[in-house]
Image (cartoon, rainbow, N blue to C red):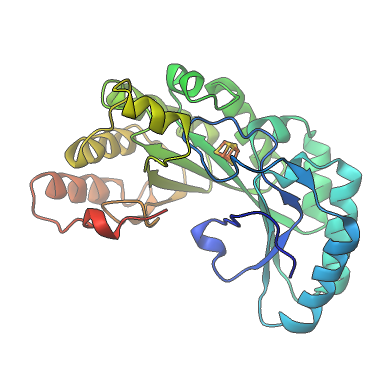
Length: 290
Ligand code: SF4
C-alpha cells in the first residue's frame, strides 16, 4: 500500500480494517490542539495510486472485512469521486461489509441527506466526527471551524441518512477554568446529536501545536487527573441517549469505560466516583499515549 505523510491515524475500532489512504492530511488543519497533519498540505491522492492500492488489497487483504478511508477528511471529496471510489471498493473487495471515514461538520453539511444516502447505498457505513467540545467558547478558542449548532446539524444529518455516527469528545480541551462548563455543554450537545457511539479521549499536549505554546506561556492549564475525572463525570451526567455506546478505551484515557447507554449510566457514574475516591486503579501517566 502507498501511504504518504508522517501519520496515518484511524479510530481504535478500525484496528483491523484495511486502511485505504485516499487523501493526505486534513482540509481544515487549524485545530489548535491537533498536531497530526500540521506539516502536511491537504491533497487528494492520485487516482492511479488508489487503484493500485485497491488491487493490492484485493490480492492480499481477503480476511479483512472492513475498510477505513484515510486521512482526516475524506467526505470533503466531490460526490462523484466518492461514488466511483465506493463502487470500486464494492467491485474489487466484495467481502468487505463496512466502509468508514472521518468527516468534519463542514464536509457533512456540504452533502445533502440524499447524497449521504447514496453513499450509504454504495457501502459507506460509518462516519467518525470529532466534536471535541459542545461548549461554544471552547470550540471558538480551539479553531474547530464549527459551533455547537453546526455540530448538532451535522450529526443529525448523518443519522437521518441512516449512517452509523461515532463522535469523539476531548477531556481537558477547555483547560482547568472552563472544564465543567465544557463537560456540561458537551453532554448536552452529544445528546442532541444522538450518536450511535461516543468515544472519549483525554487531551495530551503535542509539542508542534499552538495549544502547547499557549500552555508553555501559561495561558492554558490542563486539569489534573482528578479534574479530568470530574469533567468526565459531569459529561456523562448530562448525557441522555435513547441508545448508544460510550467508550473511553483510547490509550490517552486514565479510566477505561465501555458501556451501553442508558442502561449502564448509573454504573459508569459509580465507577467514576470510586476512581475519584481512589478505589479504582487508573492508568499511570507513562502508559498514556495518542
Ligand atoms: S479537523 Fe481533525 S484532523 Fe483536522 S485539524 Fe482538526 S482535529 Fe486535526
